Image 1 (tube, rainbow, N blue to C red):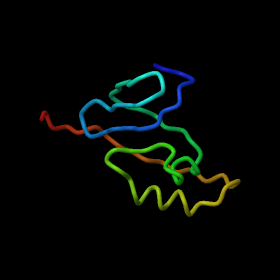
Image 2: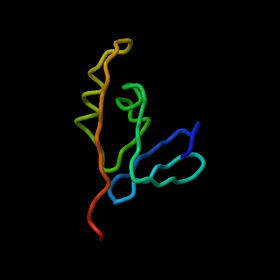
Image 3: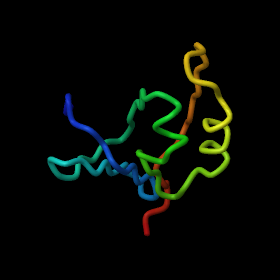
Image 4: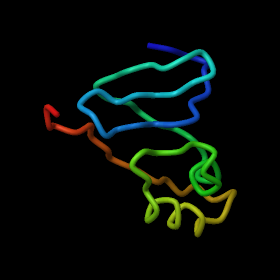
Length: 80
């Protein structure tokens, strides 16, 4: 587990999810992402493959409201 480290990109194309950080790449089977919707809407945190529908939904949410956005992403199950 890595704490207090900003993540710039989440790559969930493979079985293990890759998180790109300023301290290097971290891999995990699962991740929990808790960020303000403005981070997702502004694409400060990038997902690979991209999540355009989720970004658009986050952009439509007003700030200061207690809205929650849940994104469920799994790494690929293919072995290739």
